[in-house]
Image (cartoon, rainbow, N blue to C red; front, side, top):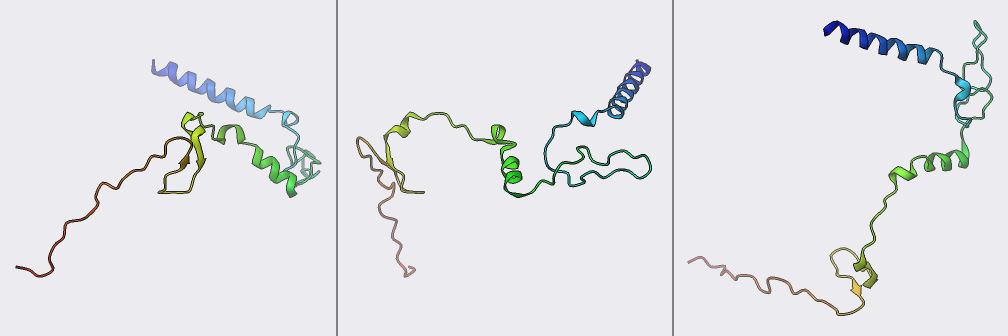
Length: 121
């Protein structure tokens, strides 16, 4: 049992290493972002960038594309609340909103505190 687990782990590691070794950089998406240009390795002559010749990512277009990357996952999608149909105005924190229909007022739970005399007896 122990040897079979070791063999499975070794096969998985070898297959991962082989897949990374034969990865094809031409399958990467074309986008601006690596400022290396057409730099090549002086020994082997291979390109040093994943996407040689691409322009550096900069300016407004790069910022806009970066902002749009994760919109679908990070966007807040709230469910429709039927009580919000009555709202006319939201005055802010701690205040009740103005609504269409009956105006509900909430009285404070305590109108007057207990009075204690200042002179001890």
